[in-house]
Image (tube, rainbow, N blue to C red; front, side, top):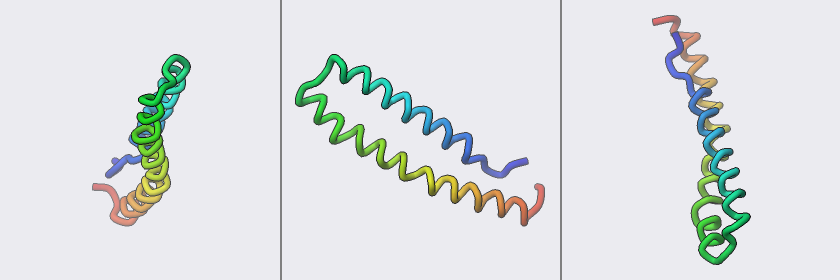
Length: 75
Protein backbone atom coordinates (compact mmCIF):
# COMPACT_ATOMS: atom_id res chain seq x y z
CA UNK A 1 0.00 0.00 0.00
CA UNK A 2 1.39 3.38 -0.99
CA UNK A 3 1.76 5.94 1.77
CA UNK A 4 1.27 8.92 -0.52
CA UNK A 5 0.67 9.10 -4.22
CA UNK A 6 1.68 12.57 -5.34
CA UNK A 7 1.96 11.58 -8.99
CA UNK A 8 -1.79 11.22 -9.49
CA UNK A 9 -2.48 14.63 -7.97
CA UNK A 10 0.31 16.23 -9.99
CA UNK A 11 -1.13 14.79 -13.20
CA UNK A 12 -4.58 16.10 -12.30
CA UNK A 13 -3.08 19.51 -11.59
CA UNK A 14 -1.25 19.50 -14.94
CA UNK A 15 -4.47 18.50 -16.73
CA UNK A 16 -6.36 21.32 -15.00
CA UNK A 17 -3.69 23.85 -15.96
CA UNK A 18 -3.79 22.63 -19.57
CA UNK A 19 -7.60 22.95 -19.59
CA UNK A 20 -7.37 26.48 -18.17
CA UNK A 21 -4.84 27.48 -20.80
CA UNK A 22 -6.98 26.03 -23.62
CA UNK A 23 -10.08 27.80 -22.29
CA UNK A 24 -8.18 31.06 -22.02
CA UNK A 25 -6.90 30.73 -25.58
CA UNK A 26 -10.47 30.21 -26.76
CA UNK A 27 -11.70 33.22 -24.76
CA UNK A 28 -8.92 35.43 -26.09
CA UNK A 29 -10.18 34.90 -29.63
CA UNK A 30 -13.23 37.04 -28.85
CA UNK A 31 -12.08 39.00 -25.78
CA UNK A 32 -9.08 41.22 -26.35
CA UNK A 33 -9.22 44.43 -24.35
CA UNK A 34 -7.45 45.98 -21.37
CA UNK A 35 -9.43 43.88 -18.89
CA UNK A 36 -8.50 40.63 -20.60
CA UNK A 37 -4.84 41.64 -20.70
CA UNK A 38 -4.95 42.57 -16.99
CA UNK A 39 -6.54 39.24 -16.16
CA UNK A 40 -3.88 37.39 -18.09
CA UNK A 41 -0.92 39.33 -16.67
CA UNK A 42 -2.09 39.62 -13.07
CA UNK A 43 -3.74 36.23 -12.57
CA UNK A 44 -3.35 33.64 -15.27
CA UNK A 45 0.37 33.96 -15.98
CA UNK A 46 1.32 33.94 -12.27
CA UNK A 47 -0.90 30.90 -11.65
CA UNK A 48 0.66 29.04 -14.57
CA UNK A 49 4.15 29.95 -13.40
CA UNK A 50 3.55 28.88 -9.81
CA UNK A 51 1.91 25.61 -10.79
CA UNK A 52 4.62 24.81 -13.32
CA UNK A 53 7.38 25.52 -10.82
CA UNK A 54 5.72 23.20 -8.32
CA UNK A 55 6.01 20.10 -10.54
CA UNK A 56 9.74 19.45 -10.04
CA UNK A 57 9.31 19.82 -6.28
CA UNK A 58 6.30 17.50 -6.26
CA UNK A 59 8.24 14.86 -8.19
CA UNK A 60 11.22 15.22 -5.86
CA UNK A 61 9.00 14.84 -2.79
CA UNK A 62 7.28 11.84 -4.37
CA UNK A 63 10.68 10.17 -4.82
CA UNK A 64 11.53 10.83 -1.16
CA UNK A 65 8.21 9.32 -0.05
CA UNK A 66 8.75 6.24 -2.21
CA UNK A 67 12.21 5.79 -0.69
CA UNK A 68 10.82 6.23 2.83
CA UNK A 69 8.12 3.67 2.15
CA UNK A 70 10.72 1.28 0.76
CA UNK A 71 12.99 1.69 3.80
CA UNK A 72 10.17 1.48 6.36
CA UNK A 73 8.46 -1.50 4.78
CA UNK A 74 4.76 -2.18 4.50
CA UNK A 75 2.34 -1.03 7.16
